[in-house]
Image 1 (cartoon, chains in turn blue, cyan):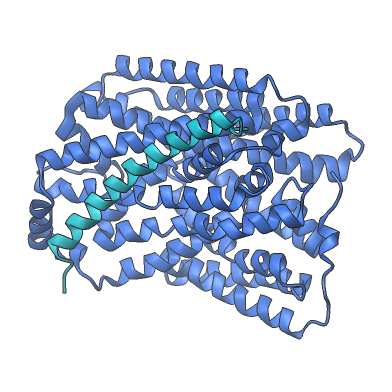
Image 2: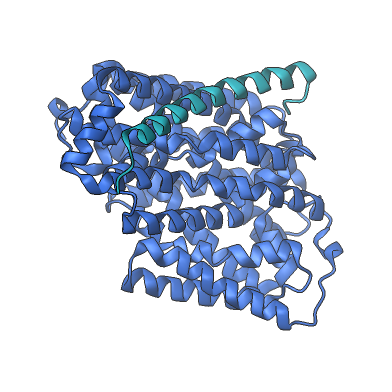
Length: 474
Length: 40
């Protein structure tokens, strides 16, 4: 990419990158000073309040996909596309009661892996670990890769340099500050992203009215405003279930359920979901304005930045650069922290060193965060292309974990036969439908198959689980 | 049958205002938590 077709001068890009990198690392080091043990590092002392809790739930769910892919969804699937993307908010909203239940049932818990091991045994735990590590590492790599690609597209910063800086910054402040730094920076990042989207959205509306956008769409792409757009309607259910599966199973969210102060979890996830819900619409409608504004869109995934830069010039380009950087950091840091905690708690402590001291566990968590960062960097350097399709590939796998988790938390009859079969059959048949039908039905089918198996196995079971078994000592 | 221009207008403006209120609400909540010593 040459400097002539980027949206922002490279010198401005490097300056912004340096400023925000210094800010996040400085805050991470400052907040990390109070972390003494693994519990402090991994769960912020289990004492996070409502404001920081709500913001971190929303921020972690605002990935670069939310700010970049939502406009693409709107461009390709129209009004239903924006609404379909917003459905992912229900992952957070419906996790709210689960967060309360998790905190009550597992007062000493650390990870979602703890739940699978204690509730369903080692085999189910092993399958869960395979699914969740595949998903988490794919998400992590796709975010880091997206970071490099976006910084290059926005400001002409070399792909490897941009990706390296974003990853290095997140690794440093997550290593030093643990979940405390992740949650603290998430709050600032949430406000920057939301305010940025509001300012940019109203600025676009100063240049083109919604009536003009609607008239242009009706004339040039009528399917985008059609009430019955089949692919978009199917995408609603797929995104809803993909969102549920992602949030319900992933340690990113479970670690927060354990970290929030007692009584805060359900409110924080509900508020986080409500904060997140309008963002894909506010970010997505900008893409619908591209036709009315005569903005050429050579690549659909760049439609948002192109429209904003066209309307607002360099100020808009600066805004989108900051929004994208914050979106990436708020997700990468959470994935690094949660995946590191999962490996420390579920593999190192439970299998390798059960007698490890809290200080030693904290130290191991920091080294694993560093190793994850280096591994991710090594995978990203060759720039093998977008991993968005691989992430959708994980949809049926995460969808297949919804029912084992929900029934396992509320229903004593739920059992390991149901959980194992539900994950394997749901994931397997969901993947087959991914290849034979399409991504937009894979999660729905995987979830449905898993549901039938899990409910059937529970219905036929005579087992009654003892909830006290989940209260394992730390 | 198409979505009307009015519907799209409501959708866009409500989402932008919703975002603005969310940001203000989060900032207010943090100040309240800090004053009560309940931020973390």
